Length: 261
Ligand SMILES: Nc1ncnc2c1ncn2[C@@H]1O[C@H](COP(=O)(O)OP(=O)(O)OP(=O)(O)O)[C@@H](O)[C@H]1O
Image (cartoon, rainbow, N blue to C red):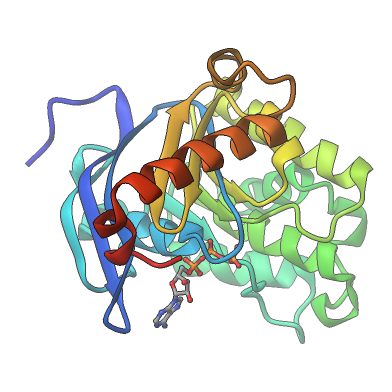
């Protein structure tokens, strides 16, 4: 069944996930608008990867409502429409970058665009054309991550879910990747959900989901977050929201017993 909420690429209502007997995501409700770059930010262990796994349909013990592109998360028809890049590069180190892309393009089968063009476009997207014939095992960590990203771009996904794609990259490469993310929304209408624990990346996003300890602290734009917390930086805005949440926990101790700390 297709949802009527067509404006949202992701719609969560009361989303809860239990891992190892603990509630690691508790009652999250939010929207990720289509054709936007939405940042998923919060400290290590707050549940960003778990949320992304739920969105791409690989997370067990998910309850509540979670719709992706109008369908329940994990629906088979979403597989070709959702790209997912994990923190660990998932490409073959004994093949070159181009051979990896050739291989994954043939696994994808006939899709939008010709095989050769798709491979070359994906290499160019991540600025790796000049290293296309180097064995992935001989590339740097950042270059390997970009090969993984190129694989995800091969299928021209409608939703691209990226788990900390800029970790370990120098500022020039980071800027290049953020430029690419915005080009993807503007030129291809792609929706991007990007996790980071670096608050200065928040300002590069059109919308933000701020998380702490399995809960959503905010679902807003960077400008509005700064305005309503009366802060100048995203880091200060986040700290303000954390302090407010802590005060709420003190007033209602049952609240925090349900989730991770
Ligand atoms: N296999 C598992 N079994 C039980 N708990 C888990 C498992 N994997 C992760 N967790 C817990 O779930 C919570 C959320 O983990 P998650 O990896 O989603 O956080 P994260 O925000 O992505 O962290 P990071 O930024 O360090 O990648 C953490 O408290 C973690 O300890």
